[in-house]
Image (cartoon, rainbow, N blue to C red):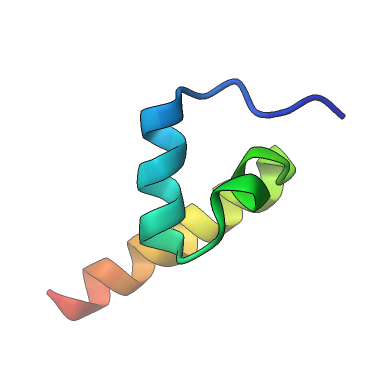
Length: 48
């Protein structure tokens, strides 16, 4: 599996918001990353 095709800045922002090490973000399968982003979005909507 190849690394995600995202910029370094995007990877850093994802790492901070998901509280996951940067290396783990770069090697995370895309479908898992999308699922985590969906969870994060759901949490943000519940807080509002």
